[in-house]
Image (tube, rainbow, N blue to C red; front, side):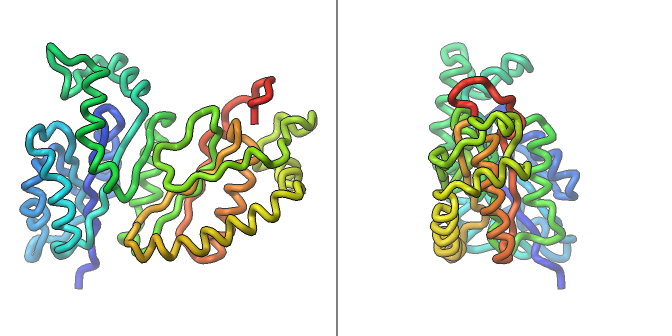
Length: 301
């Protein structure tokens, strides 16, 4: 009996990295289809029914579909309600990036945005595309924000999340530490602000140390507010995660933020990830802003 195969439907903003995502899925031995009209999704998926050999499949559907794009959400709902063997429910992956970063990428590559016309420039094209994709973004099981990524960052996330030998049968939890001064992660489902904790930046010997070092970790954990925070945080995730799983959510991103994303948020995110792992959840941890240099001002950490 063949194991259930993965069906990934990729959408997202033009210039955000969908082509790179497709290439990465190919490296993971997925069969990839680009720019498929949404109405053809069920027919395309059915190609891998017996006697044909089952394959993991990734399909890109985005704004290039034009007038047919509005059919994407109904087709996703149809495949979710009535999965086609050998696939389970499809996973909708949305690749995103900030408007400023998208403009920068199109200028650097000199490529034409698919919605640019003689009457519509790049900024208006991106705005229109966001409006077109708003519903599918809301429906997405996983959002990957590539604003601050080098190419390898996107490839690594896809390998970490989708590169298992078999489909994820449980909730995949991503715990991300970040700095508010660098922006809240676009893919965050839940955000916690820990800027009220004691800041190691104001201790000269700790100023240059990040939250992975023993000294900074001990300093943050010694704050009288840290222990009750962690207890309440653990209680909340312990209660809420099973509810997300009952809802059928496949991916959950929990973001922990301090000002610069180098010390306090790193400590708390690490402790939360350890707690979740000890509860046997599938967890990946990312310290998004830990590499940012410390600046000599009161918003450094």
